Image (tube, rainbow, N blue to C red):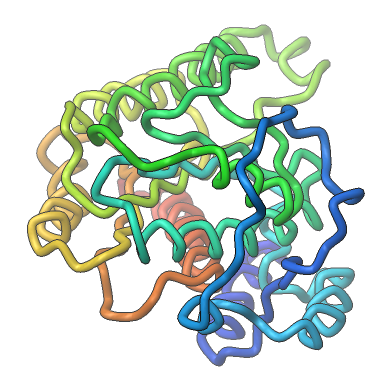
Length: 304
């Protein structure tokens, strides 16, 4: 077993024991914001008494920062992936679901930035960043202040076009992966290889467009160019308790790759009854990465 795999498995065990900590950057000064687009913002967000349940005490920040500085952190795997967060901003997300998502991403962004200088890319289903017309994403977000700036701007409304947003993200990325695979062996690695991506889709309902075709086509293209098993991972996380959404997520995870005989690039986490937290998301990400490395080991041993 490789050192990296041991690190991944150790991370899962530590996360399950509840020893991992998450950042609380809620009191970070505005001067520490990174290069996010200038936005015209409404009055500053004021948390209610109910909101306090989602906050993490600031004394944990120092302890977690020390842990992040070492390779023993359960989230050291983030160095090897670009993290993309796709946020459902449809009308049904108004209220506690929106706030849970906001608080979770505000905690995740600085954790990812500790291991990846690019931070995280955030995409909404309906809201576009017109400074990035190719994909509409808000790129290189590194602080909770930048996340809160985005969420102050966006107001949930409209439908749930998950398939369209995934297509926007995957189309240029898969082209880069295919170009790398076609390059001559002597030149393929002369530049930087295409970094694997983890796409986390946070949603509360069933998409209003075709997600299945987008996922199947992406998996087939990855198979055709013999990309790494962990080159692309798409993880759907349910916020809220919609039973139809839970059923859809379970079918997506259990059936898709078997029905079409393609690589399994999808993981799902239906609602478990608990509030969404950054620790939950990071454990899901870690589990998905570990599963794909396990699949490579099986493949080398003679399995699919």
